[in-house]
Structure formats: structure tokens, C-alpha cells
Image 1 (cartoon, rainbow, N blue to C red):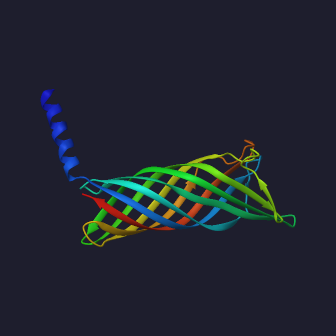
Image 2: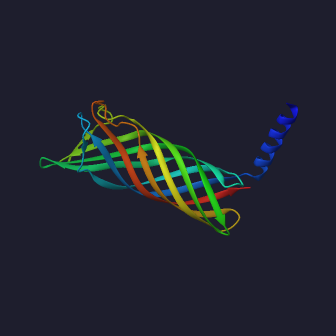
Image 3: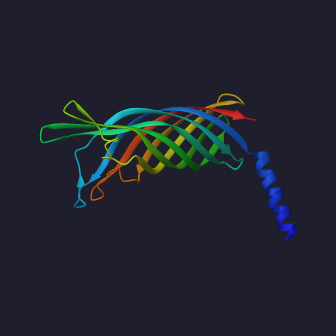
Length: 204
């Protein structure tokens, strides 16, 4: 038993010595939309995407074998537009995002490729619905859930400029799993495609 404990400790020390930490800063350009199902469980088409941005600060714990564990905190916007019975609807939502996940990085020289899967929790800071140029605060009115959660899938590429700074570009797909509707007979979820440009600062 002592031998097993000693081996585990030595492996842990070896991993910690070979690990590297990064601080990250990034900005994103996103295409957001909703997936909506009515009370009969039928998918309603016709929603048009909105274009918005986001930004985040993060920390990444990278192991020598290529595995890394990213954590991010940031702001992002969501929304969509819809035309029904000659009425124009649009939604503008803003979230505080927290993300935690697992990724794998493969490097060859100064270049590298990576893929990460991160879970996210979003808390709505602002929720506005516009109907024919008239704005409604649906967040404070309780017409939409303030909490959202889901998964990010992010493949990307990176370039190491020097021992301390690298640049990366990610392509993101966000799958929202939380129901945005306060009326539980209906269901709507966030969807997003986007691109992220970031800088990583190595902590030696």
C-alpha cells in the first residue's frame, strides 16, 4: 500500500513539474439563433440569426501529454429575429459566462492544432424583446429564464510567437441545453456559431 501511495505521489509530482499554465484573453464574433418548439412539441422554423460579439479572460492548465484544462469567464450576447403576421420580433440577450472543460493540443514546431469541449453556465444580465420598434424588458418581467447552460465544441489552431506568447484561432459551436422559456409547455434553446481570436501568456 505504501509503495502504491509513493508511486502516485511521484507521478503527481512528475505531472506537476511538466505542466504549464497559461493566462488567456480573447474576443469572438458570433452568429446566434434560437431553436424553438411549441406546446405541441413541433419545431418552429423561420428564426433568423443575429450577429454579435463576446470576450473572455481565462486560465489554462496544460500537461506535457497534450491534455489541457481551460477555464474562462466572460461576456457574450445572444439573440435572433422573427417575422410573424406582419410583426417584427427581435431578441437581444446578454450573458455572463463561466466555462470549464477539457482539451487536447498537438504541436509541431511553432504551430499547433487543438480541440476542446467545455461546459458553460450563463447568467442573463440583460434581456430585451423588440416588437415593431417597441422594447420590452423580458428579463425583469420574468418572461425568460435568467439561467442557461450547455456545451461548447471548439477546434482551433495556434502559433507560438516566443516562449511566453502564443496566438490562437478557434471555431466554436455552442449547443444550449437550458430551456429559455418560463412557460415550460414550450421550449427554446440558444444556438451559436462563432470564431475566437486569442492570446495566451505562458506562466513559467
